[in-house]
Image (cartoon, rainbow, N blue to C red; front, top):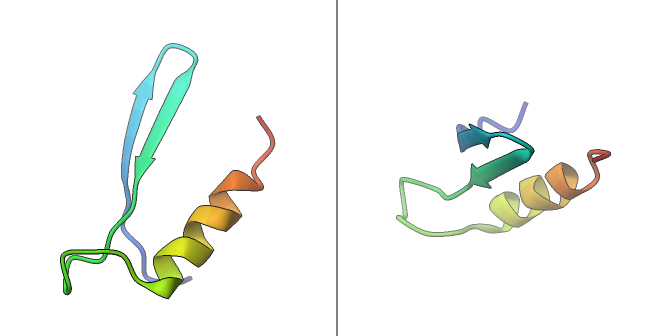
Length: 43
């Protein structure tokens, strides 16, 4: 929906999601919005 393509790493009992904007090689406001939405996912 927001055209994000995060790297997702899975391990036993763990999930790591790396987010950044390749175009600027850094973080944008939309990256922080995406991260906040990920944090809302029940664990």
